[in-house]
Image (cartoon, rainbow, N blue to C red):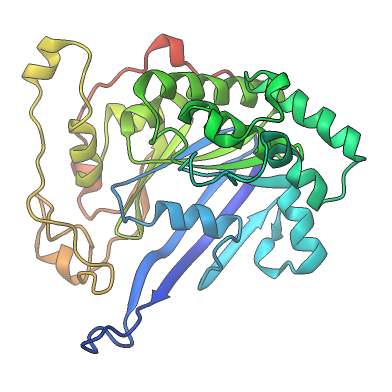
Length: 343
């Protein structure tokens, strides 16, 4: 498979506004700093990390909802940072966004028929009758009753609203979907339904996903490869099996140690890796490795020299000076019912 999306040295810094006391004037929040990865056509890349690590900002930069500070974003070998006007509008037919909050992402004054068909109206696709017919078709695809097309968002549950958001994202037959924590606001049982729906849609329509989440137990069910972020930096990337079986970066190891195992004996026998302290401020990140202030194996070199993301095993890269010497077997298996459907 060829690369559908290629991100190179993506950086996004936000200027800090002056406060009433004049503090932090001239500073910048380093939300995303020199992030690079690729996504092959038809695969799902999981982008994970704790809150504030920059994963959502990365997703918004990819689709240019947020303008990057620097770096390149290639979609089908075309740098989308250079696109303007009609060319940018044409790109957005191919790349759509599924938002995290199903309550805030839908206009309460529009019916779901108007919401789902809005992309068709913006891109002047079909007549009004054809747009309504397409909206009904999409509602049926995501498991909702097409006869409810004239209802308003407040008449639906959170899971149903997220299905409406997915239907809207599919309206223009995109190839790439940026899923920004699409199940984090839903109940566990509804999360499984939405994840299964995304898997079915990927199989049926040949979609490519960048799936952003902070819950590693969710990401493992849907991802082909997983990229881990910490304080704006990419610290590890690998296929899901290698990452969950033998994570090399200490931060990934600590995240995975917090994922509960279904076997009570294994859960009791496993040692939890608990990090000390709080994440540093992205306004003033530590020198060298940004994780060294909380890392259990940090040495002097970690605070003096920033580690590069390098290959430590075939197809497995980590940004740690001691990554090749520090694989920890975690042993988390993916449940059979969530095995990805390969088209």
